[in-house]
Length: 248
Image (cartoon, rainbow, N blue to C red; front, side):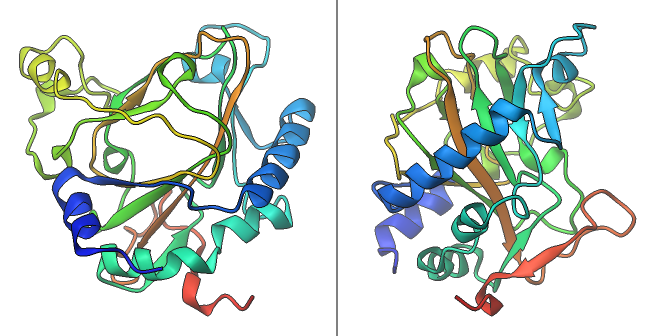
């Protein structure tokens, strides 16, 4: 699939791009079914809401399934989906490489028990020589504000910030005067099964907690340009796969 020049410009201007009806519905259904099996059994490795909040609660509400590439063939099928390779090559202006150190996850927002995801830039948590990384978010069902839809701040991937605008955990501070004005520019688009969001590693994004009665389950992985090297001896220095070398 080739992007139009308008789509390319939109990504580089806003820091994200939405591709409606991109993934096959049957593939999404198969991914969702397997994801629910792993979530029900709490198959490790996982991240729990309790671990994330560090609140001492000993119960386990799964926030994300980690390291999903090697869990199920259907997960791997999506992460190596040939239809997206040309798109990623165009936006990265480089050979696309799948990284397994970050994201590589089934993300959840469980009813009533999910936490808010604060405003942040993924690049602040990662360790690469440059920021030429793009994440691929797949909606496995309906996503909207009430169940924790992603919201973005357009153009934030090109903005310079000072350290006072972030807390000690690299979260963008909601109440900082400069941040409050910027957050007013946030945008969102409701997603349906098969919709994909591509977003730059420096694009500010967040999601509220799920206040509905049903789980929201999504899939996210990250790619980088071949010439974007991880910094040695950091957690980003991990397994990678050149997508165009995958034989299907």
